[in-house]
Image 1 (cartoon, helix red, strand yellow):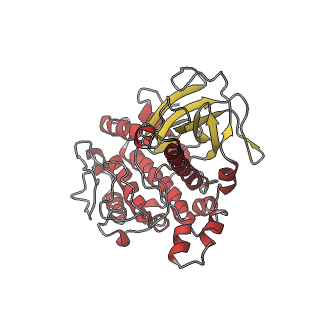
Image 2 (cartoon, rainbow, N blue to C red; image 1 turned 135 degrees about the vertical axis):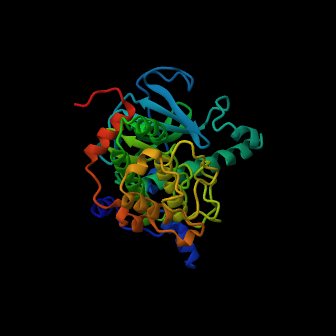
Image 3 (cartoon, rainbow, N blue to C red; image 1 turned 45 degrees about the horizontal axis):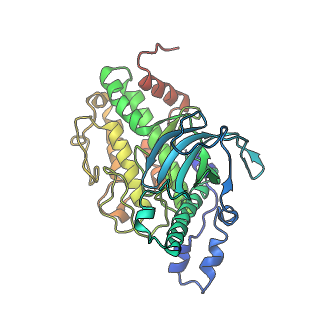
Length: 376
């Protein structure tokens, strides 16, 4: 696992926030920003691309434009382009995910509050659009700094489709972690998946998320919205992968709210260890009994094997395995952020040693999703 971590990680970088805090000379931040990943793409602007069929507006249904989700930072579509998309001389094909974040058509109103909140005079609206464009650039640059990290969804470019501006990313054939966690509890309870296999799936999930977070830490950025909504199991790669950098930022800045059940109420600013805290809540959800309810902050503070709300079927595991799981989680959910371990430190924890081959996790995931399918 450490080898996989180092293979996925490039050299660390100093963020503008860190440089500023060190008392950099005037103008250094601007020069550093020009060297940040994605700076060239930002400078070039949004590339116009066409869909496989004529653009009929965001509400048009068809195989080239299908809405698959949405949130505070944009609407997400599965798209098929008219031509293959090239990036750095590499052909990425025609099928992608497009996160639409800003419409230049005032009738479209994306984001919904932009035109309502912006002054109605032309200059005020232009300033509001420019500020929102900067937020798109920030999300893109956070995402592209993770380029080459297998456990992170890869962005391809800044594009314009019709009147909409946004980010083009790879399309993953996968299952949202929220769906998998929900189905896994039933599969475990019904005996379709044995307790050891369920635990191995949980170990693989948290290891993959921590590999991604270790790379975030290397690059001087934080995700700020780790949750079951933003992790997906990639069925082709047999790997859990992190999605959506909409709340991504530099450490030390304002703390984003995040998703209910994953919020670190003990951190005042954006911090890597808050991402670790949120990742722990994913693991807690996969190991706990469905009857145990978590609040806005999830689970915080130390636990023991006796008071951790393990799913009943997991109690059959050898005590050492459960003890290792609780000790591991405790390193992530302490109420004092500075006392928590980093992602890279956690990857060396005994709980994550000797992980089973990914083929076994793939078989478990497919059994969870298709419990009636006979083996073989």
